Length: 320
Image (cartoon, rainbow, N blue to C red; front, side, top):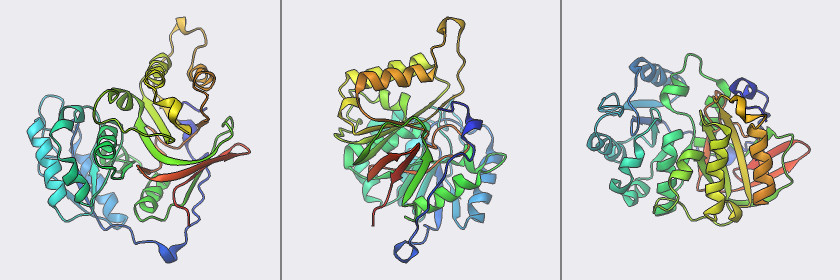
């Protein structure tokens, strides 16, 4: 499994079996909010808006999206107000500018029914996993785990595939996402797609914001977490009775960590070996998702299929 972001570049094959006769056009407007960490580079938000506009989206930036309070994008009250404004404004898509930390503090104060009833499509990842999963747990509503303004659309170089997959996911044109998974376990299953950042999923255990999903397809990634910490969080999810109830565990990229001398060869491969032998649920690696340049936009809460064959994995997002 490539654990370097660079190894993730364009070694995935994406099948866009798009039948355009029954696809909606892509939503035409995106509203940017900052529910977590402060934006350190406002120019990246401007660049993201230009890039999104070039893709055909109108954009609007929430009035406190660039606020700073301690490490946060404004006070808790300001960030909550930004989410409320996002529900009432006209653009159909609401995107987080960045992750970091901050949504944990807000979860009990968000009106989840209002979020679901707004009909907005929310997208973000990392800390935004908390929003995706709380919305699913509280209302059953779907949202997207995918690229954000600062790290993706406002990056020095926008990855074309990330932008294309974002566009296709939002317009319902992405039917099958296929990617290389040389060591994938054999699986052919259907279930609710859910997950995101592993540390955030683990942080929800025991809270009312953890979705209760049987027979799901759980996808996970993380950044700057040592393999032993990744394993500890996975063992928490296993011991909490969550992993064993899933039909498949799909791993994206685990990047930006340093091994120590006393690891003695213990790396992500060891973690995956432990996961397979302990949990006895099919494991699929290589999902183009995580804190990497090439990332898919995934529908959290949607009923999907997953199948593997001859070193390839196929995530069936839309069956016609």
